[in-house]
Length: 282
Image 1 (cartoon, rainbow, N blue to C red):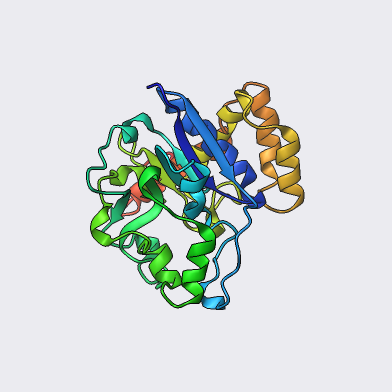
Image 2: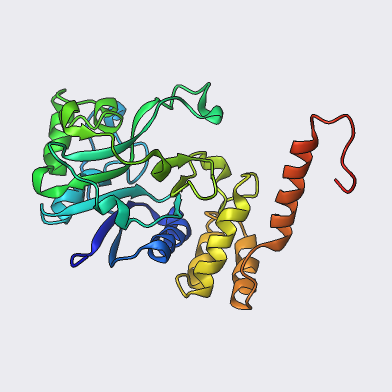
């Protein structure tokens, strides 16, 4: 592969630690060169109608990618709240054909989103492969269309309304956007969609040991500085325990063993919940 694989991540200061772990996880598994771009603080004009304004600081950043990429080549968009377990080079082999955007599909809401109107089954655009040479997106023009009523927020974000429906392909494997679940040997990317339980914030997520292992390996490999973690802890963006985990990782302990054991214990309890008697040692 002669050209680097360009990955653009929508993020902000509150996601600095998660973004670094995500970047490290891409690089760990990639078999080709990567350019990883953390998109923060881009100048985005605000739509006049509050209903059309971005829900996060980086919601609209994905539409800046073709211009940032010089309107040429491929680029992958991802959110910051993710972790990778597969080789992104496999996505670079997928043909666009007549499509200009490739995405994943989630046919039904996962259990934790079933009773929430926020989640819409169908095409998911939090992971997108873009044919930048065939996308003339310009953020000022996009906001102008929102202001003129030619687009609305739902159509823009949830339907990728800048592209005709038949020019959007659904050929990105679903394993590249597993929502809050992990299947060993299958999952290529985990998307931590429940903001309140993202594993860098607290220990309420059942995948905490998985992310903590990635955090520790990123620290070991020099992908994170302690100052960055301290800054995030001081502002309440991440749990304070990450500082202790950072120091343990620097000392050679590559996973949060206490939490990992607790997780195994929990899984044992859940498996035994249907039995008439707890297994010995549960």
